[in-house]
Length: 247
Length: 370
Image 1 (spheres, rainbow over the protein chains, first blue to last red):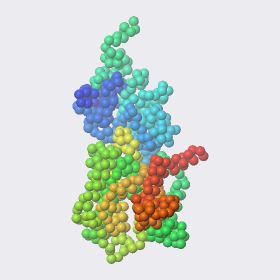
Image 2: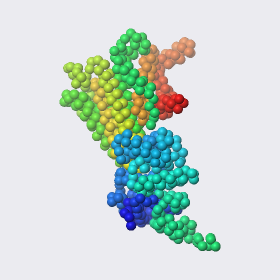
Image 3: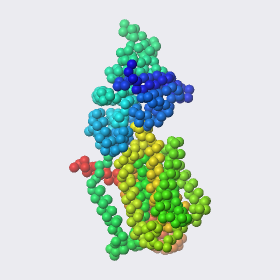
Image 4: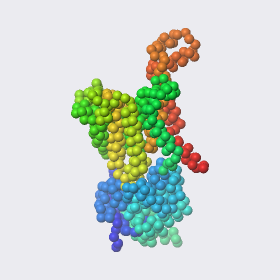
């Protein structure tokens, strides 16, 4: 087994009586794209919030790169090298695309000039350079998602947490974004991606973790997951019998 | 980034030259002939001093309220801290207000850090932070009224020094104050320009736009906001010292009043908050309008009684004019203030983002079409 970059053990989060995440484990290996999937309300975004420091777990331990990050501020976690995007994208609407990305770039530099260079490089990588001077608030959904990824990339993370960056995109836009994510992985950045579009997950991910009702029900490579009975049950219900449909 | 209009730099440069040379001909026949009655010579310099001081204060506020988007309605508190610190030090020890000014800035910064810590620790935002700043300023005003060492409601008279030297920060003429105020304003612009183009400035704007997103990108929102309060407070305190030295007399109801806090914000918002030159433009537009309308309308009608006016048998048109004169003399609140208010409302309706962004838009359109 290769060295894991992020290790979540026994992580639990309760909202009053509701257990949103229940003793979930997750191990993210370096250099891979890991997909985090599950039905609506399974606790994917909550799990993301726990990993990135926007929520604090009630139990369990999260270790990133040798640092225990429970209870740390999101900004400090970002400084350690883990950056997230938001499902509901949060651009800085009054600023231009370039300035949005520059703000991410300041994570690793104090110089405005250097931040601008990093930002331009990142925009080149995500193929969005021609929109650099646009106001971020004026962009359509696809553009906002691209900026969201670019901002996170500009912080030069080791681990990138992507929360539904493909949702709401047209098939063409999706193809472009998938190409971008491939380039990001090739640049040596580990990715965890939450996604509903199965085709994307199956083709893009090296490893998949499935959660349902806040519990970790399966993990493995895409082939294993696609035939896993527990996963089928979670998505399609217990009465479902694959054989009966076929025959 | 907002494209820099080259023309604007020439305009700013020429304006600065004009302002630097203004004292030379403030009393010339031409100025006396052109300007309304009573607005030449030292009165003109006085208006200039007011403009520079408010432009500076408004710029100071802009760092917290404009860049960082944290609405402070209590900046008069920091103004008062500056005014009282330097003045008390001077009264009791005779140490130059220039030194006291630095002490005032340091104390204001510390108080600013404290206020920021308490507010942001408990996640106060928007209107709730604004309420805290109002409460803070009001409490400070009441404390300054209560305590004896501040002179209480009688205020603090800054003793005249035997000699008028730069070191004493006291002058018989208006000119030195004029240049100091101009210097303060230029200092304020430079600080804002440096902040605006620095990492700190970018971080403040990010926090203003979305605190969560900023935090996700490695920005410690609380620390950055606290730095913004402290810097803004320290700068405002320097203005307080200037005011104390200019008027030679300070009283809590004057230097820590809410009206002052509001005025500071007004100039920034009208000019364009969050932009380096926004508060400056706002002040240069509004203060002259306010002063002019006051001077123009304050001539006649003084002492007239409303009852006498109503009973007088003159044509109704003339009566209306006389009524306006009555208002302008301070009768029903003052026509000058009324006019000022109408202008403010019109500007807010027409240019909700401020005057300067409107100019930028025109500039961008011109760039786009050429």
